[in-house]
Length: 562
Image (cartoon, rainbow, N blue to C red; front, top):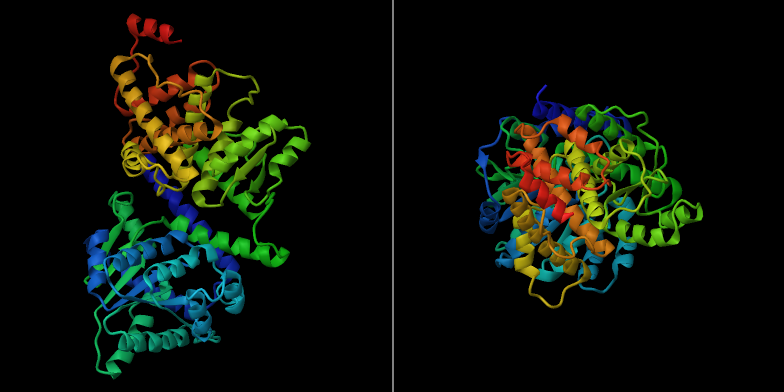
């Protein structure tokens, strides 16, 4: 099977397995929800009209009087996309009223008090019973209040508690009465409603709003903003457009934002379920040591999938303990157990602050800072890389350590793309934009300063890469590139590695590199002299359609450089 076809099959299998797992948890036999879901999916079955753009959607929002934003509550990028559009509309002067499902209308006074700064976060969350009445991450949802404060936007809660077989329709009718009333009270505003995506089918909440307005003899210009339709995602995949198109026009008054794969979307819900279960069971806010439970099993599944795709057989797929950022004593415990020294711990601490994932080989500890599909898949890749090479404690030259780290980052990132092809790494243009935006500013935070330094060194290394490919000589690498502090070293090697991994994954579909070449690179003794540097540039040559120079002159230059 061709690589692309097999990757698509992997995605579809993982999505179906995840959906089955979710169904097993939340139950299957709910006729109302099933019907509701079918009515929602019907919107996408006939496909889309054409690709659209962010500016086109904003222009439509600027002219509309009603906007329906379909939200997937556990997916942070879902809220981010909505906030981006609303922020731009407010910046351009559109007056906006926010109607949200996250707040119940019975708590409106608390919402108003919080917006006015009369109560703080803790008091607001307690008064509205956030955890029991809503329960989704405050860190993500609090951004709507920040938006409202920046632009002086009112927020109205339109949710209510409803039970019984007709609960979804009851909530739709109730919310519709409030939304339609607000369009009368604020006729010159955009009434923007952020509600669960299933409620946003035209026959659901919007249909109820239309009925309410019709009783008053009123019409409003409406626009629908859906997100991440699974049906449309697979249509884009068929057309090789899933990494190209971010905005779709569904019909005259409806658009779809495509910012997450189905796997990422459903995994966000599964992660939320898991964390909520742990929190309720153990009265803890965060997930700590996971051990051999659900999320660890998920990583093992990713290890198996990546290995099968690359034709790699591992003796053990689960020889690790899994930890997250919530386990604050992880590194100290590894020192107490005599696995790492105190000096090594300080270097690891600097590394762990920068990394989304890591594998501590000596301790057999797999660390995932934030459990997302991308981070978990990248961690799986790190485990495979470790399993295919002997553990090395010997010190190596700074240059060899630099390119070894670049290759680990490139290959781990490549592995993550097998599971989550929707993620994207910064390329040279992106880093040049960082320099243009922040390069001359004097007052920058620590992360921005590190970003600027990484951008400068990334661009310098790319210029060096072009010289090497043109001349065949490794002479003249950027000065002090191999003598960076830990955070700078991690940031730069990660940036270079991910950029290479991104290109490798794209090249796999174009047959510029093969799965066998990737698997061979994963077996390299990466800390031996020149091995990683040679592999790094050999891959660049393959991506550029070149072969490694073999002339005597090239060999002499390499020797001089060494």
